Image 1: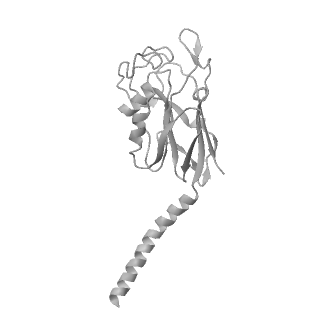
Image 2 (image 1 turned 30 degrees about the horizontal axis):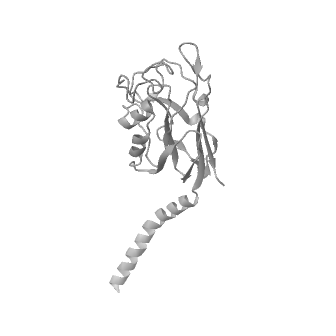
Image 3 (image 1 turned 90 degrees about the vertical axis):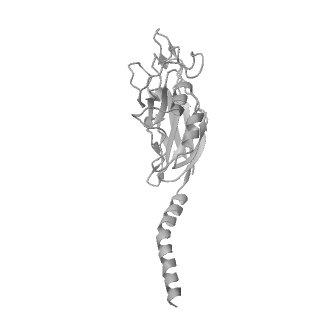
Length: 227
């Protein structure tokens, strides 16, 4: 009799300990929403001013996105950028950074995106959106939100609308900068990938003395929650 009582108490204790976690998980899953995310290049032939007085467009490269939670983040500011971030920022190659973030704890989903093509993601309250895309007319600049990303919910209410204001132009600190749209070591003009002198810097918001167009004149980020 005593053994049966002890077993019953143990089972009740286990149930009490696990019920809150299960309840929270189920509640979050019940509040999950599907979002349509579009990252567009909105530049035109007058967006980027060149040193010779002419103007040109400011394209962005195909990039990567992820839905993350907890402490997961895409990159670390004020630290040297790693080789995967270097490849994205210098050459527009997001494949290594995508492979790296897929191995980070707290990443719910991650994939490539093409500017202008809508992508669909599913997220729960507490989830965040991160992405990165090269500013093509540069040596090592990229567009991204803050490293930990953009909150996809305000409480239980899904984020919606134009969220471009959450996007920043970042400097990977991996290659010596040249005037945007004119440098011989920038992707449209360089002879091959990974061309140009190493900067040995750190990741930080772009501030190198050159003039760059405003973020909203190059990129538009829209997020819509499906009903």
